Length: 295
Image (cartoon, rainbow, N blue to C red; front, side):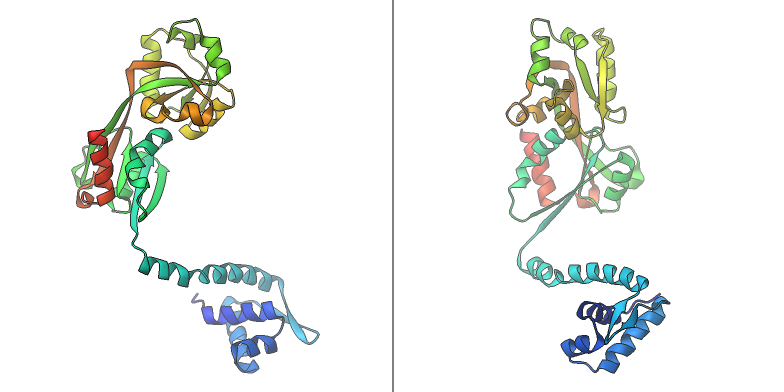
């Protein structure tokens, strides 16, 4: 069906004004012209939208549905001129970043920090499964993917990667659990505490499970989360203690009232920058990579 938006606009105007005459007067048109165009819209939709009521018209049930959607369309349309003018006069650097499930949001923020102060930045962040994000990257719908692993060895995708971060894991918790762990050596104290962990889809979770076994720990897991920021929130509310990369933990004590229980020197979170070779020269992506190299 081809929808004539001029006809839709006049119908919407009639509905708002409560009559054909008032809508015609507002637009400087003949009443017959407005009536004909509204009837043309009704024919294209296959339903009556207006019905006579006294000296005016009212919406039918079908008309109410059409009017609600038209209201949304024309409300959005009112912003087009402002947005076009802004885009034409203010330089914008668009940066579309994919974040694979399970990455520490705090560590990601630290990696993106070198570009966040750029007044030209228009940042778009997408979170999802690795395969989907890499497909979007290969199609150049994303400029960068941050993942817990390097690019797959798939020549057809044309992807390259490098490790930006390898940060030791720190265990954090609210005061109630930090006090409960006091007096016991780390990491054995974790046996007595409720643990909040990333779900099994996260690359870090596999390394955590191996680390528990290596140290003879029997973890008491009370929660598993796909979103690391949500995990930190539940920890802050007292549900348990959780692991986070040292790079992402720098602001936690100040912002969340959390304390460090201990650091795992033999367990790290890795974050890799994956880029399409055709898009290697994005200035903001290069700034992120250069800052990670020197940092």
